[in-house]
Amino acid sequence: MKIKLHHINLCSTDVPGLDAFYRDVMGLAVEPGLSANRKTDEGYAGNVAFVTDGTTQMHLAEKDLGIGFRTGQVVNPLEKGHIAFRTDDIAAFKAHLKAKGVAFSDYGAWAMSGWEQIFFYDPDGNVVEVHQVTGPIG
Image (cartoon, rainbow, N blue to C red; front, side, top):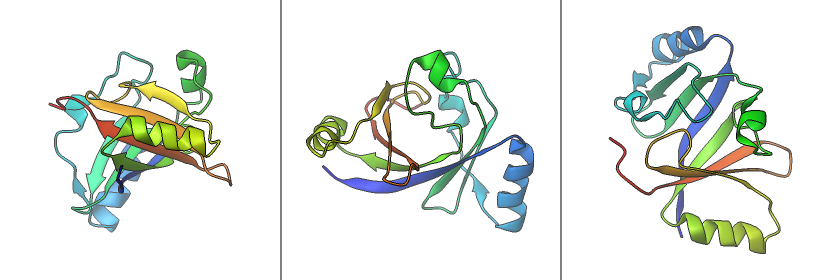
């Protein structure tokens, strides 16, 4: 089971302004293709912009305090944002978390087509995502 930093998610009430800042001031490029792979009918239809430095992505998402209520999950990844890692074996990573006594919310293939996602808290309450690409993503 390997993990690699994949993206940082920042939440905002002004996604277009945040997007403009990261593209115009920081020089990041639009991450192509991700918008078409969003699953907006399963709990999150908020505005999202995807940018990248060519290696790591940033997902700039509209803040949504109701995600946990609509999905029945404890961890809300769209309240304050999160850091995300990609794994090659989500089942092994879930077993690893259970063995370490770390509780997680299993969102499954919820926000992005072909991504199985789990979310949990680090010791300081920061939200961490680990996901695996399990199917076609467009």
